[in-house]
Length: 510
Image (cartoon, rainbow, N blue to C red; front, side, top):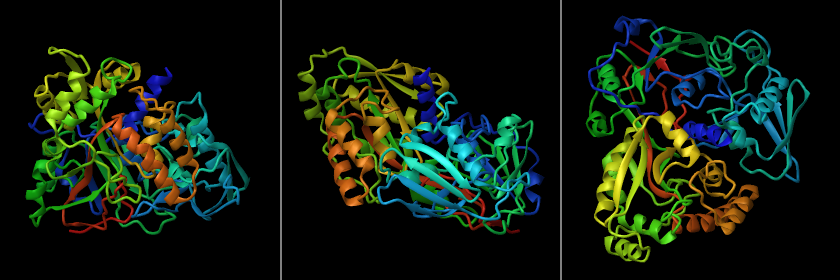
């Protein structure tokens, strides 16, 4: 059960990009777009639920990031800034953090926001029996208390330099009021402190939000937001071109270059903190042989894989962290070299008829496309790849049970280097489904997550990542850009590197 819960948690870090047929879908009455000041946003799927501590669906977070707030939040450069907390102090031993809360904040139901709301939310997330998706972020928290209505104190078991990044992640770290949990409405009628209030989810799946007139962050220009599930990116873009929706993050990568030259569509992208990778099941042979994994890495042309999956909207990378980050490690030991791959394979004794499966999900089409290229490239060194395409629920079950030779997937929303490496490559990491174990890496990752000096932290991570890459714990492929599109009547919207969707500063003209 525990591994199933951890498998489900993987979905939290993934961008949904489901792809159906191109016949189009009924998006409702196009005249709805004429509602003054109401933004129509095309999202990739229908939210599965509205409890921000339990959902793992990206479409759910697209809605909830506009309803709820966090104690602190990532700014434009992803450094943490004030939100429901306006100030914080750290003790000399780095084990006690004291947060001063913003005054005058009210919940959408009219009740005053107080420190006990933070304590309740964090204790709910930390409750092992509850099974919150983000419980792993609180691993070092010993206690959370409220000495008064305007103060929250967090006690730690060890220094945690990335505490702000942990509690400030928009996905899954929302502060919620206890009453909607107790009356059971949190999953159907969420109540937050954010810029928009939840109104309803219509029978066709559309979610309706209205402006929060009492928002602590200032006046909200939009009257409301309507989120319309449109699974097919091509259909979403067609609806944007027709003016039937105002915004979408479902932008077909092959269309980006052409769209950027148009006057009737705005397309913007940023280098994000996402990465996509291939993992091999080290607990199975021959994948437990590091020479086999290295052979696979030499046999793959990452440039070609990236081009096939996302055209020019991604950057090949043999480590996880993108190149514009302070913590990026410029290390790329695996040049595309079939001869080197063949030489390594000869020593593994796999034979000429070796076949392996590569597990992908049709709900993330780029994994299917990348897998096809990988299969072609590995066939050139004598490895037969059988692509196993599953729906995502089954994919998660298979991952959690270890029923795979290899798989393709990605993570989004990463901010701190600990997000990129610890859970995936520490021998006791919650997402180490592929069975990697290196005591030296464990020690370095343990030290790095408790180190308060950034330069020293980077040195520790660089040393750990070199081993992770050399031993092909993950076979990293590329960092995708975050790409969104909207009509010119939309102003004030900013594409975020953490893939959060926030409409609080957006206005709509015309």
